Image (spheres, rainbow, N blue to C red):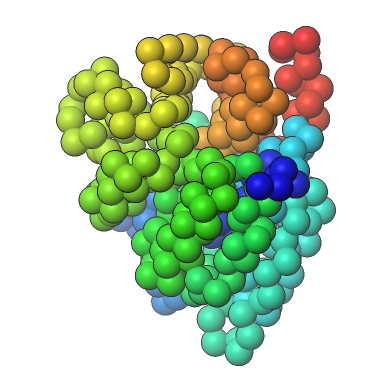
Length: 332
């Protein structure tokens, strides 16, 4: 078996985020649950966009954000995701390549389905309420998965959000088979509670089959996955089924459980939370960067916490500061 030439290959939604500030009265008027994520259709996206305040367009997508952070930390990575042949598709492709991530997917032709966009309303406390129109992202075909590319990466990273549409789900299932055949590791980010509620049986099936080596989930997500109300019981249930469980807990830090080893770290201090968009994505980036370097679990968690702290200090889900320098200052 040949040595991998990539550290991570990720499959996820190719999305451009449109961020705007909003107060809680606006959320209430729109019938939105603060801090939640929902899927919307084209008509809803058009209507909400018209009522939002002035927005900033910044490339996003959970797995793509993770790769942007991972590349900033020196990792070798590539992304598979579907954009359309339109302006936002060009923005996404330019941004991810400029951040050092290989992206060679042809755009979806035809013009009927636009590139995905996520309308993000950020309240003064930094919480983000996400309204996602999947557009072209939900038409990622299984044929887009290059099995040789999958085999070239040490880790295949799957984005839970993309499990919802049928075509991308088939693409990820093909990638899982290719990764397993090549003896590579598979990481899964479950992405959101609604993904688990919709596809809990599928995720558990992946886990029980041994097709998840690293599982990323926040506190609410691990509770939903385990189907219990107690955090420690949820961690015990999940950690017994995956080789490595990484769970973030917001301001309470994060834990990692690998076999009998359990490590916890505190959240990194920050002067002000500006926008929590991408916090979990960048945490995964930092953790995986440490993981591929062979660092211990505590260092991996600290690297994740450093990357997450950087991204919540500004608008947008991609890093702006020098993550390598921040990690070096923290860990030496």
